[in-house]
Image (cartoon, rainbow, N blue to C red; front, side, top):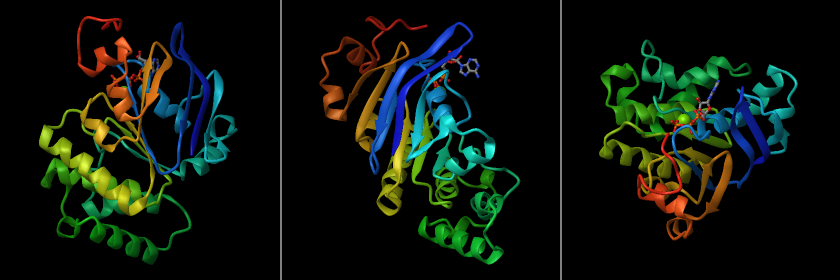
Length: 249
Ligand SMILES: Nc1ncnc2c1ncn2[C@@H]1O[C@H](COP(=O)(O)OP(=O)(O)OP(=O)(O)O)[C@@H](O)[C@H]1O
Ligand SMILES: [Mg+2]
């Protein structure tokens, strides 16, 4: 579904990604982990075409976003991608209903009736009807995440990208977010890309775990194989140990 092929990305002298290749298979959830500053968010921005690599290419389905020559072309490829950032980033001045309808209003080709029907439908499906007219600050963080998810799903993207969906949340709300991902995956069957350093909690929504270190993919494995990997870097990261081959910056 997404092919990341030999991608190199640097900022000035700092090499962030040094030949990264990952195949993200349709219907699966691939989790990208690694220490802070390793380039996880940069990789996500490259997939979305917000940043450009110096070398290598990224295909979303059969469309090469790194070769797109203008913003219109990139926007058309982005239609297949939905994104959920950590902050959920709802518009405070819009109601739940207005937040969810927003992405459809931004796109051409949808009539007002169609937008209304789709928004109503997803609000019902996601059990958000009682909060339709509430503002984000009036509802719990868990519900805000649910609204963010509904807003990401309303355009029916093939791929959903999550950048640290629950960092900074308490464990109960964090678990709610994982349950929400599971629940929505059953209904919408999207391909998932989750960025996280929450190990091992994130394993519950992961089919494949990819770890980045020093600009490279050092392991790509099922959660079980990841857990049992003999690689010292993997074990150090998994257990949050200070001593080991990974130097904390
Ligand atoms: N636009 C930019 N200009 C310059 N440097 C950047 C830019 N974006 C990211 N970087 C640098 O690239 C490196 C990787 O950043 P990135 O945000 O991808 O890390 P990360 O793995 O997502 O970390 P975290 O887990 O803390 O979110 C960092 O050193 C960061 O400072
Ligand atoms: Mg990041």
